[in-house]
Image (cartoon, rainbow, N blue to C red; front, side):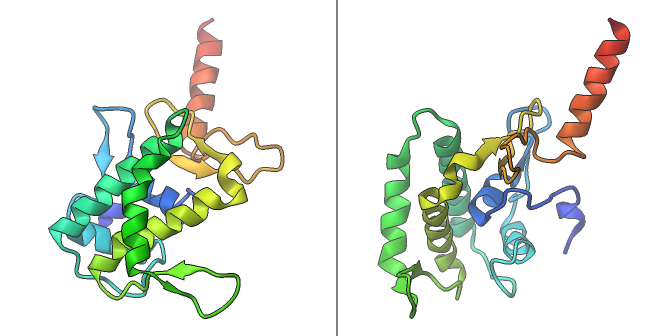
Length: 182
C-alpha cells in the first residue's frame, strides 16, 4: 500500500461512509484532497477497507462513476431534506446486476468480480446503510473544514468529531488557546 493513504482512517463505520471520507478537508477548498485521484488509488482503497480480497484493475470510467456516486451520497447525507431521488439511477442499475444471496433474510448482492461491478456493489452497500437503524446516528464532523461523515456509536449520541485525536484535539487546543487569550 502506498504512502498515499497515510492519515486516512476508515472511521465512517460503514463502507459507504468510508467512501465519502476519501475526500479529506471537503469543506476547506485550500486543503481539500481527493484520495481517489487515479484508478490505482480506488483499487487500493477497495483493499484497504476490506471490500475486496485483491486489487481490481480499475478503469478511468469506473473511477469517475464511483466519484460521482460518492458526491451524490455526500449530498444525500448532509442535505435537509435529503435528495434521495438522486440515488434512484445507481440503485436501479445495481439491481440489474445483482443476485440474491442464498440465505435468509433476503439480500441482494453484487460480487466484486471485476471493476464494472464496483459501482453496483457500493450502491447496494449504501442502500443497506440507508435502510438500517444506524441512519439516525450518522453525523458530519464538526471540525472546521473537515466534512468527514461517521456513525456515532456512543451511548448518548454525543460524538462530535471524526476522530478525537484529530479534529477533536484541534478543537480542544483552540478552546484552550482562546481561553488563555481572553
